[in-house]
Length: 329
Image (cartoon, rainbow, N blue to C red):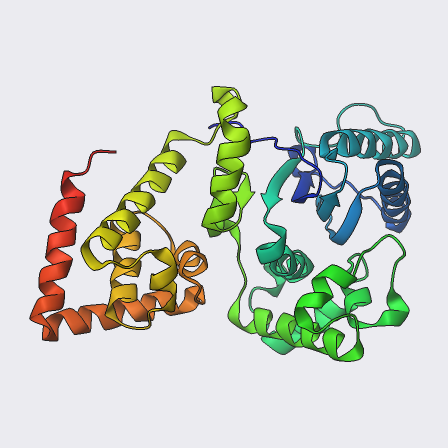
């Protein structure tokens, strides 16, 4: 497996995770969690890093951070070493606390910041014991969970000084009572509908739209050692996607931006080709074409119904598939 990218630049945003060695707990009690948060707050101040969201689970943690100075590696090295030392001293142990290096996903701030904040906040109900619980029970458990930045997003009286709430809440009407209520409603909707961002991650390391991914590739990827680059499979899928979009534009005159505005068979055709020939999943297609990923499957079904009734649409589909089959990637 290719080693994940380590891309740093001023203003970059990351979803950072770190898991306990051999999946063991990194917190033995409440005092460990409090110590962890104190060290996190200190490290944020030292390295001028902004924290937008966090959650502490038993054997891992999630952070959503922004680095105005482009110094994620320095920040995480200091933070992880400091907490490991404190944990080992307190529990009279030696050795590694974490399972290898931390994992970080570079995030397109304008598109995915608020989505990732919700994804992180929903972690406490993604546990086996709640698999069969209904939405109401899951919400109750989530609101009662103390080791998360979610309470401060919903209730101003529960805020923590180290969290920057304003940027996420700007997507919901601002840091006002209405904005906090809107965020709460979206969390409830996510519990009902499910929320996953994993399918949209490119090269194990980048979460963003096509323009953002292209910018990262052009700006950073060419200078990175081959072992740091995305896997061959990821690159091939990217090339297949580009080939499909180029062919669609050649045949129909519709580029990606035009397809986003389409609500008929051409956009459905793009979805189907990206799924069957490009290897993209529903969430990736949804993010690319600007629709909810849950609608992709239904739109593809409507395309099949349309092809059965429209000879010209069927002919276009067959022509595109023939041409795609001749493209070598």
